[in-house]
Image (cartoon, rainbow, N blue to C red):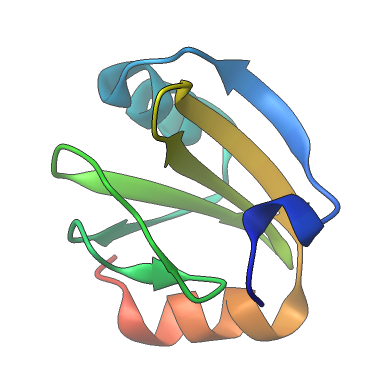
Length: 92
């Protein structure tokens, strides 16, 4: 996967802080996985202030993504193989 833009995703929060993203994931996602900055999701490293939370609901992934010059977005997309990879590598 070369670009996040090639995913079918929904923007949950736009122009959000990392704290706002963490609060949303904690409140709305059944599973939360903590990753370090630089963790790759869809082959793209996540930039952020730790702890970075990724939410999982089955195959639905909710994750913060920072676009340089555009800010941080909280995105949701469905991908079974990436959800399984995140579960296996992240800290619960």
